[in-house]
Length: 138
Image (cartoon, rainbow, N blue to C red; front, side, top):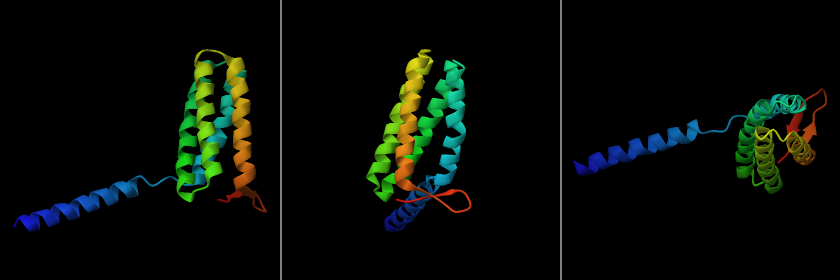
C-alpha cells in the first residue's frame, strides 16, 4: 500500500512540476519588443515634460521587459544579447532612480545610454524583412 501511495504522490508531483513549467513559458519575443516600442517613446515624452513620477514608472516597465528579454536570450546562449539585456535593465533602473529624484538631466543622459544599448542589440540580432517588420537572429 505504501508503494502505491508513493507512486501516486510521485505522479502528482511530476504533473504539478510540469504544469508549473508550462505556465512559466516566456511570452513571445515580438510581444515583449512591442511593449518596449510603446513604452520607450512614452518615457522620452515624460522626461521632456519633467514628469519624474511617470518617467520612473515607464523606466520600471522597461526594466521588467528587459528582464524578459534576458530570459528569452539565455537559453539560446547568445551571450552578447544577454549582456545587452542586463545592461538595459541596469540603465532602466538608473533612469527610474534619477527620475524619482527629479534629476532629469541624469535620467535623460541614461535614456541616451539605453538607446545605444538597444541599438547595439538590434544591429547584432535583428534583420529587416522585405515588406516591413523584423526577424531576430540568435
